[in-house]
Length: 361
Image 1 (cartoon, rainbow, N blue to C red):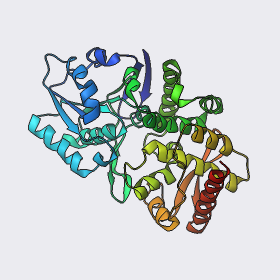
Image 2 (cartoon, rainbow, N blue to C red; image 1 turned 90 degrees about the horizontal axis):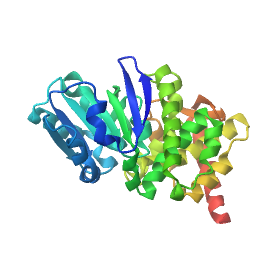
Image 3 (cartoon, helix red, strand yellow; image 1 turned 30 degrees about the vertical axis):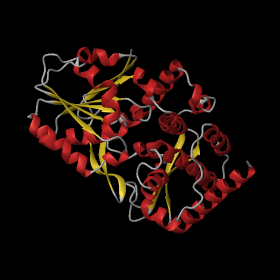
Image 4 (cartoon, rainbow, N blue to C red; image 1 turned 90 degrees about the vertical axis):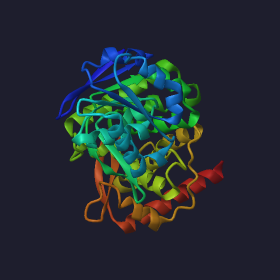
């Protein structure tokens, strides 16, 4: 088992990574709680909730189960969690355990941040994608006009990452998670990036996966420690997310996964970066890797005006001007202002580039 310590302003918290460590959860939690609420989705609950419950034979343990998917990350289910917490009698010495992917982690974390003005919660990610969202204390729900617009910075008491739970992931889930790993590599580590481009996601081995997760988490935690409230360098972690979030909202939450949308956004960021800085970046090799691993790259019918409008709901937007994370080179991200006129040109040229690539096939 690997242990990584994240130093947050409110408190430091450990990240535990290892196989089957969910069965040792009671040993990893140092504090005693008056009651525990496990929040999970229908699919994950069926697989793992009982394993978590067996850790606490003498405690009051409750469950709140939400539907699977991004559609659950909204006000209706946030209110459901608050209602459940009240009816179960949770108090300020209670604990919420977020057992699931990024949707569960964001929703349960935001519920913990606001229930009785804040109680402890533990992230127990069960997807590759959630290695990113479970670290750093950003918790939120979506609004129909934009992603993660209602939320808070609220660090967990711990992150317990049982890699054995990743064995049940679908190919789509694996694709989604690796997009965030590629993002982390692009902003910080060229060697890691090149290593990822040699991975065939269908045949990725468990030891490779653990190595990649550890590297990604260390990049994320090092950035978070420097800039917890996203006032500076933490914005760089949004590489690929300006278009990615807009695509999710434009297509309808759940039509493509968050990671698949981010993958397209990463490609777009490389495209804009090459145009902006007149530099050669790994657009072609990234495109080929995404294509080989079956990422959905067919977005030929974009409405540029609608996409730009949705981009402006991004939290980095200032004075109605889009702020986009670009790369001068791998490991050298920069936040750049882009006006609507230029953005429209970039979107048109990007979709044209993808269209030409599809015809070449």
